[in-house]
Image (cartoon, helix red, strand yellow):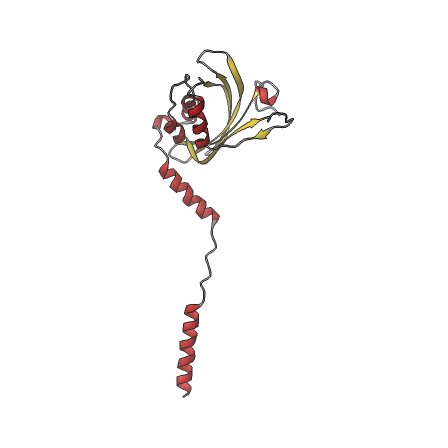
Length: 197
């Protein structure tokens, strides 16, 4: 009789153990982010090797791809290929009636949507006129002074500074973020040395 009771107890114990609810695995946000990034990298258009071979090359491509006359389609696939997944473009603006500045983060896709509409009727040419670079390994911060015009040699419509973060993954250069302000918004002229305090 006692053997039968022991056997039943073991069987019941095994059954209740098998039916115990499994403890859900805690989600790992870093792992999820890495998986999203890899999926996004796989979907990106392939960059032209000459566009991403150096810091100079990717900055030249960045300015070149957004510039052109009114009605001339930009190569938006080339534009997309320069940005690492999660990159942002962040203009500083002064909203109407405001006395303080506001950051307006957008994605490269947001910029494409805006650019397709804007360049249909407006020319835009932006070029770098000065640069200061700070780097630590694969992390690079570029302070790129720019001038913008409506035509190649037209009147100056804006001058400012693009703060551009670049990253080299061992294979190519990527744009991580662009943060910018123009002289009108800043309320002051771009200094000769943008590293000044």
